[in-house]
Amino acid sequence: MSTFGLFDEAVRLGLEGLHLDDGVLESLDEAYLKEVCAAARERGLYLEYNFSMDLGGMGIGIQHVLDEAIATAQALGADIVKVSMDLKRPRPVSASRFHPDVMAQMNAFASRLKASAPAASAAGVRIAVENHCDSFSEEILWLLDLVDSPVVGACVDTVNALMVMEDPMKAIENLAPRALTNHFRDDRIEFQRYGCKLKGTALGEGDIDMKRAYEIIRTKSAMRRINIETEMEIPLDSMEVALRMEKETVERSIRYCREVLGIKREAED
Image 1 (cartoon, rainbow, N blue to C red):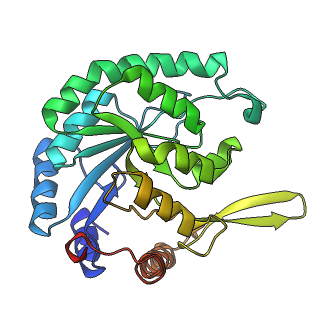
Image 2: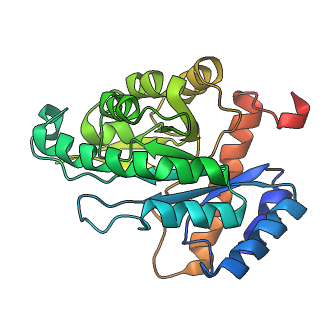
């Protein structure tokens, strides 16, 4: 599916915008990005841009330097740049909150954020730091306090706190008041003989209390968007089957948001 085909699908589903990364874009050439910007505006879609710093050197996500990501977002007409740090954490993870090794990485990143905040402000872009399977919510808050910029806030992912053994509801409560955007996501915990695994699901079909998560976001944050995220365990040998699974999961998630959570389009509020 092309970027423009994805936009048409979003319109068909009655969505208001997309939170996208380079995996969706055929090119990062400025002329192409401006074409994408025009196509989104023509369809009345907002855009947010997602990338990774990969500070831990683990090869996770789409990597840029901050100023590159801000320029890409500006060309796209996106008003949010979501960045994940992807820190390298010592073990045991559950005991590594504010560990010196982690704080050294975050201090270095804070310096980059401070340096790039003026460019973001000039571009009309805000930077949202995600709790991306690598950080405790209190560490994100510490980082935001250190940077102390009106254009730098949080991205709250409703599942990721599990990866550092933090209560997801506590993380949502901590981050929502400082959040600029979100990844509204549900996972199912599947218990197995030798432990368990997290498996992606449609919203409302997993083990995250999505009703409570939405209530916290609705009442404790200034966010006016819900960005549905799905991470399905799709087959790798059939693009057709994988795409069908993704579409069905997104459609079920949209129905859950509308019919169970009562989330409406901005124009309907």
